[in-house]
Amino acid sequence: MSAPAYRERPSAAVAGAVVWTRTVRSAVEAPVLPDGCMDLLWMDGELRVAGPDTRAREVTLAGGTRIAGIRFAPGTAPALLGVPAHELRDAGIEIDALWSPAEVRRAGELVGESANPVAGLEAVAAARAAVAEPADPVVRWIATELAAGRSVAETAAATGFGARRLHRLSLASFGYGPKTLARVLRLQHGLALARADVPFAEAAARAGYADQSHFAREVRDLTGMPLRRLLTAQGTDQASNAA
Image (cartoon, rainbow, N blue to C red; front, side, top):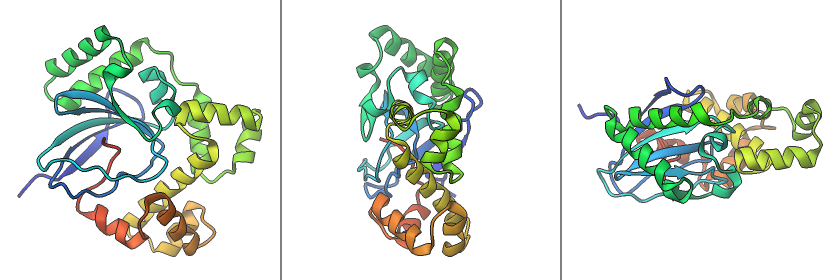
């Protein structure tokens, strides 16, 4: 029996992060969906960063390509990586565009000295976390509140921030404004329910959509695919923020 194309588990090194591996079966890929996260990747012997996506994108990779990644919880990666999230929005770049040659060399050594690329990525992330200023706790709170369905206005009021300050913080932490972040997080919530075989109408209601039609429109707008087709496409190869 062949190994699954995609595997993930909670990171043992970085709170809230997920480590994953993916083996590309063929050049025909399921779409990479927006999730409000940023990933540090090990791919073809190189470290890369995948920034936050605003909409789904398709990535064509050669069959047999293996990727390891650590996906940071929304809002936490900029402090570790040393770059505002909006600078990497809808982009994937090699790490030497962000870090000094010495930092890149040490990161490569950590991966090379580890038992496998996943352990290496965790070592790199842990080393960065040890010297970086932690993300402002309010950032995680904002993501949690928006994911739970609180409106942008309610969230701004609860933080004591004005709308402009919340927007600036959201851009730096998540890569886009709070309204887009709320749409992305709601999409992920609704899709997670649908993948768990929750009926579409119930999934829509529980995720905070007005109705099933609203859910379907948002799926099509953010992913470019109808809901059922998207779930079928992802059924054979879980997509992650991997390029």
